[in-house]
Image (tube, rainbow, N blue to C red; front, side, top):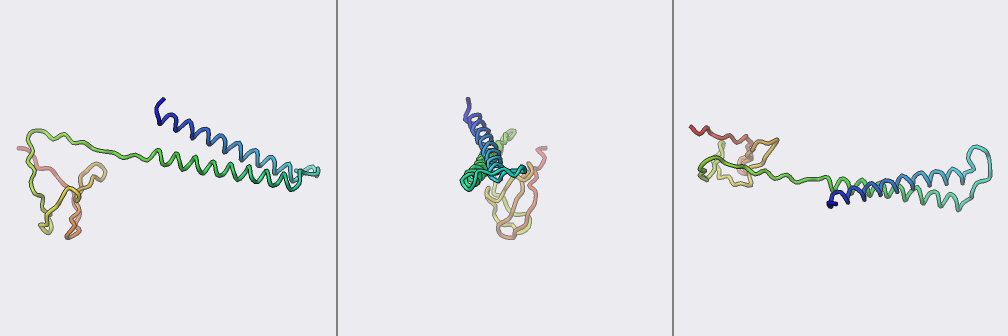
Length: 131
């Protein structure tokens, strides 16, 4: 199995254990309180055990949710295949003429956007036609 598959199996196991802890803690607390029948409950020890199981289940639930959120974060890398010969030229800002570097270009919704570090102008980078 791949690492991701094992991760999701572990997350499901944590969630099942959390659900079991919450249910068990709730049932023990209900039994310790005597329920609706007025029967003498399990006492202080039962309340303590029920609270520990309930809190443990909630903690497992939080841990499982955090692990799942960390694993689903992804980094996306775009590789661009440029047709024909390309010449690398020095880029200048349209507004102030300041020199731009590759760090000033970011992909926003799939389109390259330039942010000038000198005048803070932001504009979309367009490619001139080849003909």
